[in-house]
Image 1: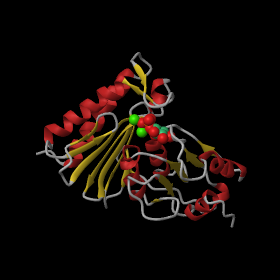
Image 2: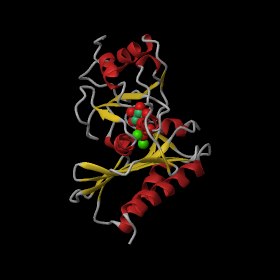
Image 3: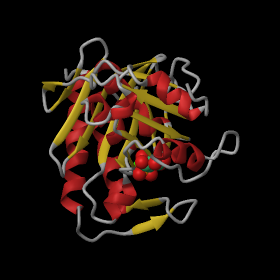
Image 4: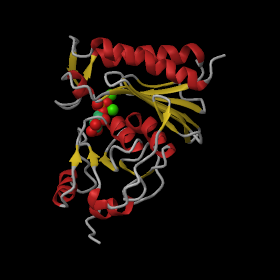
Amino acid sequence: MATLKEVLLEATREAGKIIQHYFQGSFKVENKDTVNNLVTEVDKHAETRIIEVIKQYFPEHAIMSEEIGELKKDSPYQWIIDPIDGTVNFAHGIPICCVSIGLKHEDSMLLGAVYNPMMNELFFAEKGKGAFLNDEPISVSKKSDFRKACLVTGFPYNWPQTSEHPIRVFERFILEGLPVRRLGSAAIDLCWVACGRFDGFWEYNLNPWDIAAGYLIVEEAGGKITNFAGAPYTVFDKETLATNGLIHEAMQSIIHNKKK
Ligand code: IPD
Ligand code: CA
Ligand code: CA
């Protein structure tokens, strides 16, 4: 009998093969709700293959996947799938995109994998057992001086109605003189915090499939992930702040416009 981890990695690698096969090739691209929110036939193809692999071993498990929605809900195990995170990059032949799959049991994330086949980078974490990049243990950066931090963010397709405009917050970080990157894949942003390339990441309005795997990978790499108020995080949160832990409060102060 295959383990949960083996099935997760098989599904992740299968999707990775599909993504790599079509990358910079030709495929159908459609618009979703907004003009820049795209879905390609490759997203759907990868999603179908991931679900096939999971169902082959664990047909009783619940699934939440970006393009197809929720399948079966009455199981304590739920696979949370983003077949391609960074679809706009993928559609433009930009090699910053990945498959992201997390496995939740009851209320906690058990396993997560994020795979960018174009860069041959497979991030993986298991609750309580650490985080890995291509089987090597990873950890967040040790930078405590916020002035020297390198940050990453993303902009949602739909602006949040209930909080300050994300551009204002972005502007404050830029005016602090910090380098802030925008890669276009929240799952990769989180993994790059986990392996210390970035010191912090924030974004509004992400969905569970963008975050599920990366969330566990950051935590298992020793990082901190909360909402903007600093409260414990769930994959259903609409505000995501992930850091090395050392610059968390400094980032919160900028987000809330409270200069120290
Ligand atoms: C998007 C990416 C992007 C983030 C968007 C997400 P998609 O996911 O993660 O970085 O800024 O909010 O929706 O559409 O490429 O799967
Ligand atoms: Ca996504
Ligand atoms: Ca996606």
